[in-house]
Amino acid sequence: MFKKPKILIDAQMLSRNQITGIGRYIEELLTFLTKYEEFDWEIVKPKPIKGYRTIWEHTLLPIETLIKKADLLFSPSNIIPLYLPKKVKVIVTVHDVRVKAFPETFSRNTRMYYNLIYSYLFKRANAVITVSEFSKSEILKYFPESEGKVYVIPNGINTQKFRFLNIPKKKQILFIGAIAKHKNIKVIFESFSRIYKLIPHKIVIVGSKDSGMPQDEEMFKLINSIPQERIIFTGKIGDEEVINLYNESEVFIFPSLYEGFGFPVLEAMSCGCPVIASNRSSIPEVCGDAGILFDPENPEDLAQKILEVTQNENLAKDLIKKGLERVKSFSWEETSKMYISLMKKVIYE
Image 1 (tube, one colour):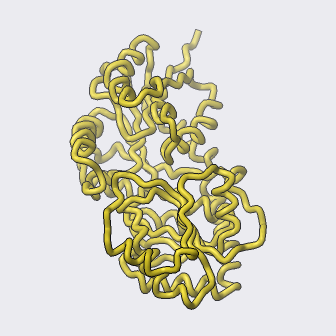
Image 2 (cartoon, one colour):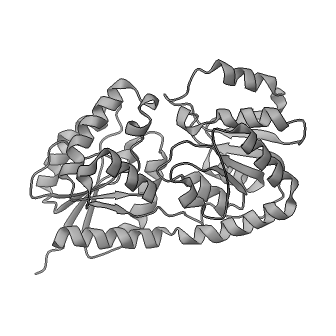
Image 3 (spheres, helix red, strand yellow):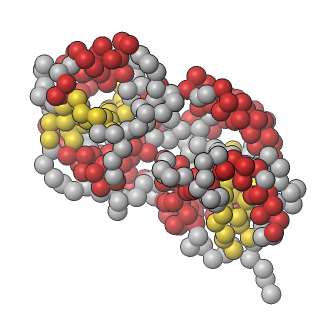
């Protein structure tokens, strides 16, 4: 009797108390992957104990591959165990290599850890998936030994969840993301300080602070130079609140300096919010012609783009239309088909 190949999925990111962007990617992808009956799937993850995930990854997970007789380990979250049995094939998704490109946004210990992991990963993995052509080029720049084993498979967007509600817009400009150095939130305040007297809009900032947030006195001066009632910090909020904010905001700004993909761009478009986004890294790939791009190091450029979108109703409507069309190119179903094709290639080659 034919035995289905056994695929073990390292879902350690789903054991966190707070699900991150990578965790959401894993949830969406697994919904579609595990529908394919050609493989025997098993999802494994550690107990949600602080500090335990790393121990589990490098000790118990390799043992799991032996006990469960795995033919393939799929790790969708940038890392693999530092030892794996030779007979177990490996596919890993590396979403970006920001730890190499922007090392200052990580702690010293985190940099050391990823340098150790990556020195092994790019040699050991049978295939490396990444989410954009930009990320592929970055991987090959820092890890040329991975030439020939890096495959680009773009992420999808759940348009049933991030949906266009067609509700009235409010005079507000939206940012959603981690409040971290590479997210470049400072340029929003620099640009808004130039134009807040010309428009009635408020800025709504949704996100959580992480270790990359600089203690920037200049930024705090900028914030204090703007009437406080014009800036709203929501902190972390629920998905339905986020979806409502996307739908009711006149503009979504994504000023990041470095992204492997940039989910919020597609989320905003899927909710019918015009997008103004950075012209750096993978972001132009994701935006296509459905968003307005700006130089993220030029606050005057962003200020002018904000005025264009908020003061030109026809332009805003055109961006909404293009955005809703653009998201049709990013389907989790199509993404999962590409994953399955690569898994078959690795298992049977």
